[in-house]
Length: 194
Image (cartoon, rainbow, N blue to C red; front, side, top):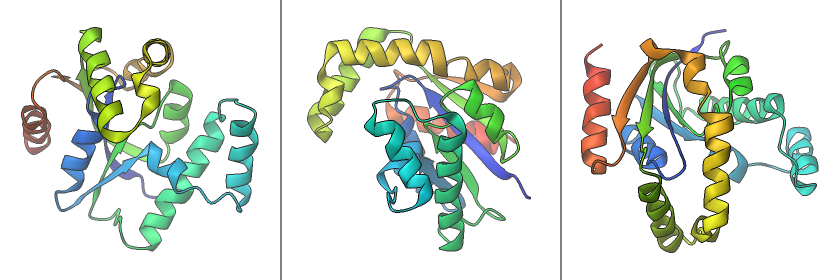
């Protein structure tokens, strides 16, 4: 099986992953795929969808292998519908892999060309971004300070170790506090330098 040529957009909640993914995805030969798309497009009539609902209805985290299988099924749909052409398109992922377990499972599926780490050490800036997004996109979970803090703690403990999985040579640190167009410019300059 051919591995998908992949760029990962990685960072804490509010760092701009979705924004940068959409920018890249608008460029021909790049296909942006957000992990959130997997769950929004979930057909709960399928065995995978029912398994997902079993965990989520109990308020439990979906196991890594099931999350990756759901992601694979959705990517396969995109290939069949010719939205994603893996022989000529680069895959741009945000929101997956979310932890080292998912990264290990996905090592046999994706060929990671670069991990763009949208770094924002100023947590107050992230919190402000999340609150603005909550108002703009009616994402009310992003408006609650306690929920935001919990999400950032989860990112630090579960998601950030993914960077170590890929190693320093694979990672391009980018200051996420810059205007989005400057972040996009840095990402594109790095891609074009290869």
